[in-house]
Image (cartoon, rainbow, N blue to C red; front, side, top):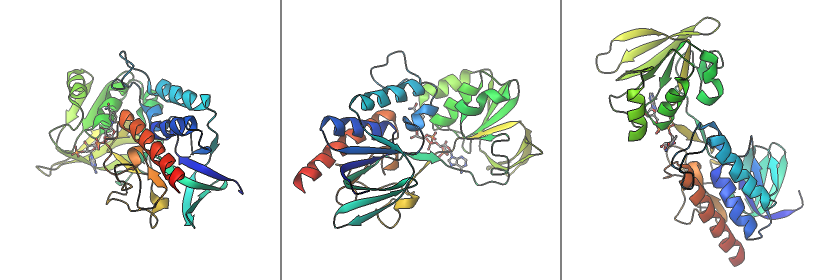
Length: 306
Ligand code: NAP
């Protein structure tokens, strides 16, 4: 507790690991704090096809692991703990975590985001009993069954395409009649014989007994209600930032993302943010890595001028 690090990085996804690589190569006395496993949300991506340097694509698990190895090569110290609060005292940052307190002169927050919930009846009750937010983790449990995916973004279509390997049918339910996902994914999904689409429709509730048996749906244009028998539902309706513990300290956007300037600095001098957690991010691995590098260079400049 007595030690004061030059820099603490919160989060070990692509943004945090990139910041860690830059900071370690600048010989900043740095600590990285990660709550689960190094790699972040990318570990849940089956295949990443748009990260330069991998012309054949790379699994999310491998890309995350390669980034972690690169950070480890520079002996970046890592503590596995959950950040719970930051206090600023005389410019020094006191970070409270589930495993104790740490002090630093500068902090980079790269804690990423987590899956948004729909908030419909049955969603909590059947979580782990047919309701899932992770196709990579749970897709194989639904062998030869029919499942639904809610959402029309990249994650929804990636999830649905992945699940087609196991199930008899994937029904994508989207609240509009236009998908948000990138065109390449749309083309692949629309051409997949195991995928069906229900347009202009929202999920109203999830029903079942010991596990999910069906979905109550409502067409937003006609108001017509229907019941769709499925044994699983994967919810992929976007991401929400892990910034609950920063309210009151940092300026946040309406959606709870951290507001930063072009140097990734927040409204508090010496606190930076990078990756999915910051407002305005395009939420791509490459952008997170770029943010991490900018934040680390900015932190180094801050440290050398303070
Ligand atoms: P997203 O792009 O924000 O898409 C969320 C989807 O959920 C949208 O289709 C949205 O509908 C729908 N939705 C949101 N709230 C809803 C609600 N209450 N009820 C029903 N539907 C709802 O989020 P994402 O797919 O999770 O992706 C997150 C980020 O990661 C994105 O920026 C994405 O580009 C990025 N990503 C990129 C790749 C890649 O291959 N490049 C892969 C994975 C993720 P509307 O379309 O009507 O808004």
